[in-house]
Image (cartoon, rainbow over all chains, first blue to last red; front, side, top):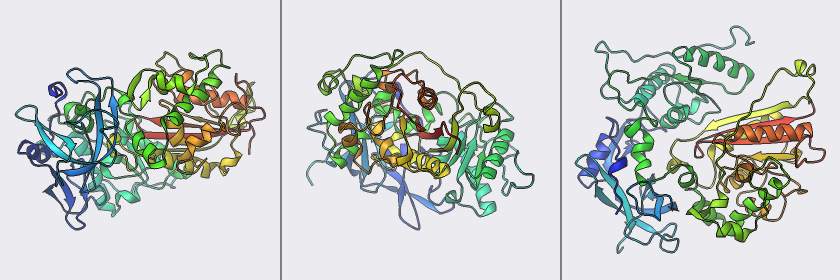
Length: 137
Length: 382
């Protein structure tokens, strides 16, 4: 497992519910109350309609592998080669992450394969949303 | 000069507190909240806004954050008078038809210091919170992220990606100033050191020192200079997102797709009229995206177009004739070198000169598919 402590993010008031959710093992994102459409990264308004009401909700934690590279240029604390990936959530939004708990090879990392979130605690403030190949159905 | 009275301010809002602080908003949030207040006052939505100007944040961040797809951006950042300058530029842009509605924003968490300073926003910036922790180490591991989706969608092979570098080396071999001149094969490219799968070393740009400058003047005055005039026929620009993971479509750059067609519409020419093309090639996939997003070929056809020799010396659409960022030079902001090569081709002085070329296109990218600009030029005045 990588050592993420050197690049640990810090929440802003707008993103605090997202990072608070991760601490509790919940993937909290936002959606437009009227349309139900999700958006990401978090912000206090829907970029499609900034005066609409929005709400936080718990995402399913399921998605598929949208794209990736396998980096041979690790930052300090990372083990290379390693994937830098984008996952598309079932809710339709995308996030950058690392795919873990599988070989870091093109053979093991197939586009569109189902993935699920796994919560990785870095410190008391920050837990990161990593993703792994989905187990079972 | 902009015709007096032809442009007006229709919305105005500010964020001022008697306490002097907004502890619930980051610096970017202050830009956004000010913008939303002004939009509310005028009844405009982000989709009604087609120009963005700001300082203290990148226009990429502000446009993306507010959900705006601009045709006009101005990140002029020269201190406290920047916003007056933004207004001036906006008036000129509107007058000349580059855009219709420009949003100018300011936001500064000067007291609370939330989301300001360092690499955009430091640990609280969008990049730090939503990408940087996953371990990218600069452009080779970021700019490259979308390509696997592109390759799967269109059945593009690693050999075809490698061919981009092979063809450009053929031009570099003719160029005394190119850093890399030795001929290479597809096998050479695939056998070069792995950087970020599927990208090998020869699919990545050089890292060099360099510089360049251009001087522009009116076409009427240009005739009085000793050099052969190169006329600007059309221009375009756009931004999409500071987060490569948030591109709308990993197989196409929205910024390219706005900037390129905008320039062609202004110039009033078709793709078939283009004799010479430069597409900023920090990495081997960029000419593929550029050829498609600018409309030179259909979706998914660019790799085969290059494979078939169309962009080679003597081909029907000579591309990156200086050798490009992959083989010529790349000091970090390569766009200047693409423009310089277009000018040389129009003056007829390029090392790999395209005989009889009259129209050249120089297409650039900024950030990791974050921004784009397109310039169409000619050695004949229309």
